[in-house]
Amino acid sequence: MLKQLQERRENQDGFTLIELMVVVLIIAILIAIAVPTFLGARERAQDRAVQSNLRNALTAGKVIYADDGDYSGATAAELADTEPALTFQAAVSADANEVSFAVAADNQSIVYAALSDSGDCWYLRDAVGNTAGTSGTTFGVRAQGAAGGDCQGSNTTGVTFGAEW
Image (cartoon, rainbow, N blue to C red; front, top):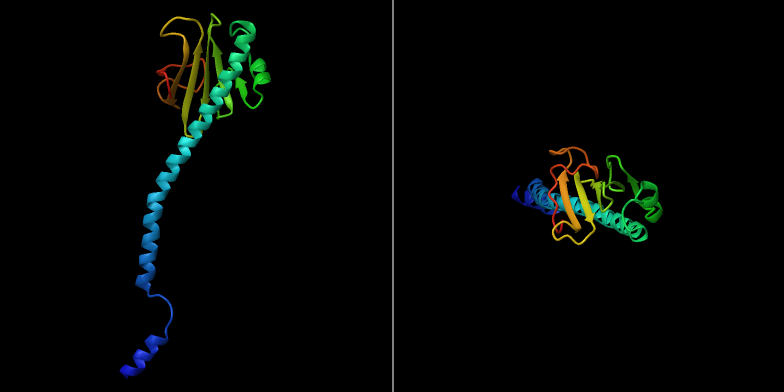
């Protein structure tokens, strides 16, 4: 009888239930480690795409500034002619390719804003002149829906601008 059981056991191919469960457990652990890393990389990539779009918008604005001597000619149509890959508007930015902008009353500074797919609103402000501390390009970010409201170039409430993102 023992000989029959041993022969039957030797003739069976495949994995036991325990072996299969160990493999499933290992795969689950690897997924638990990989998914958050992937999601973090995805959000960073979405943010970098918006930052790149804002830098392209800045370049378009600088072209207009170089032509006019101030930002008075920085209209949505003029910016779109200079950088056709982006949609410029004075209204709220709804995605990464829509850049909201606002020109200051003195035509010496402009603020761009764009909403990342990660949910953050990214800002880029360019002020011309030679006043230390107030001229130059500065950057800011605010979580969408956070204190301050919509992602719009004219709405910088709650945004702290700094030398880098």
